[in-house]
Length: 74
Ligand SMILES: [Zn+2]
Image (cartoon, helix red, strand yellow):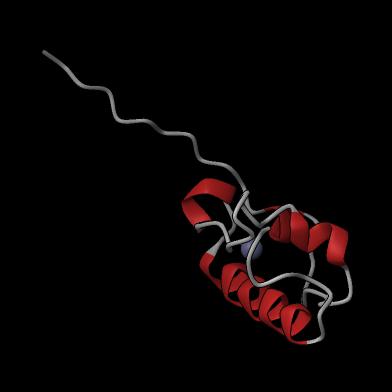
Protein backbone atom coordinates (compact mmCIF):
# COMPACT_ATOMS: atom_id res chain seq x y z
CA UNK A 1 0.00 0.00 0.00
CA UNK A 2 1.33 3.35 -1.01
CA UNK A 3 0.96 6.24 1.36
CA UNK A 4 1.16 9.50 -0.49
CA UNK A 5 3.02 12.19 1.35
CA UNK A 6 1.13 15.44 1.44
CA UNK A 7 2.96 17.97 -0.64
CA UNK A 8 1.12 21.19 -0.09
CA UNK A 9 3.97 23.62 -0.63
CA UNK A 10 2.57 27.02 0.09
CA UNK A 11 4.73 29.99 -0.68
CA UNK A 12 5.45 32.22 2.27
CA UNK A 13 3.01 35.15 2.20
CA UNK A 14 5.63 37.64 3.31
CA UNK A 15 8.17 36.47 0.72
CA UNK A 16 5.66 36.78 -2.13
CA UNK A 17 4.71 40.28 -0.99
CA UNK A 18 8.40 41.12 -0.52
CA UNK A 19 7.89 42.12 3.13
CA UNK A 20 11.16 42.75 4.95
CA UNK A 21 10.04 43.43 8.50
CA UNK A 22 6.72 42.57 10.11
CA UNK A 23 5.07 45.51 11.86
CA UNK A 24 3.99 44.73 15.42
CA UNK A 25 1.33 47.47 15.18
CA UNK A 26 -0.41 45.60 12.34
CA UNK A 27 -2.66 43.65 14.71
CA UNK A 28 -5.11 42.49 12.02
CA UNK A 29 -2.28 40.80 10.15
CA UNK A 30 -0.81 39.21 13.28
CA UNK A 31 -4.23 37.83 14.26
CA UNK A 32 -4.17 35.67 11.13
CA UNK A 33 -1.20 33.82 12.60
CA UNK A 34 -2.76 33.09 15.97
CA UNK A 35 -4.91 30.04 16.68
CA UNK A 36 -8.17 29.96 18.65
CA UNK A 37 -6.23 29.94 21.92
CA UNK A 38 -4.27 33.01 20.77
CA UNK A 39 -1.09 30.99 20.48
CA UNK A 40 1.33 31.54 17.63
CA UNK A 41 0.58 29.07 14.85
CA UNK A 42 3.28 26.70 13.68
CA UNK A 43 4.93 27.49 10.36
CA UNK A 44 3.68 24.17 8.99
CA UNK A 45 0.15 25.43 9.44
CA UNK A 46 0.62 28.87 8.01
CA UNK A 47 3.23 28.15 5.33
CA UNK A 48 5.46 30.96 6.52
CA UNK A 49 9.19 30.46 5.96
CA UNK A 50 11.62 30.15 8.88
CA UNK A 51 12.95 33.67 8.47
CA UNK A 52 9.52 35.28 8.50
CA UNK A 53 8.23 32.92 11.21
CA UNK A 54 10.93 34.28 13.52
CA UNK A 55 10.12 37.92 12.82
CA UNK A 56 6.41 37.11 13.04
CA UNK A 57 6.81 35.51 16.48
CA UNK A 58 8.85 38.50 17.62
CA UNK A 59 6.22 40.92 16.33
CA UNK A 60 3.44 39.00 18.12
CA UNK A 61 5.43 39.00 21.38
CA UNK A 62 6.08 42.72 20.99
CA UNK A 63 2.37 43.35 20.36
CA UNK A 64 1.47 41.26 23.42
CA UNK A 65 3.81 43.27 25.60
CA UNK A 66 2.12 46.47 24.45
CA UNK A 67 -1.30 44.88 25.12
CA UNK A 68 -2.28 44.99 21.42
CA UNK A 69 -2.79 41.23 21.48
CA UNK A 70 -3.80 38.93 24.35
CA UNK A 71 -1.49 36.31 25.81
CA UNK A 72 -4.36 33.86 26.21
CA UNK A 73 -7.90 33.66 24.88
CA UNK A 74 -10.81 34.06 27.20
ZN1 LIG B 1 9.15 34.35 4.03
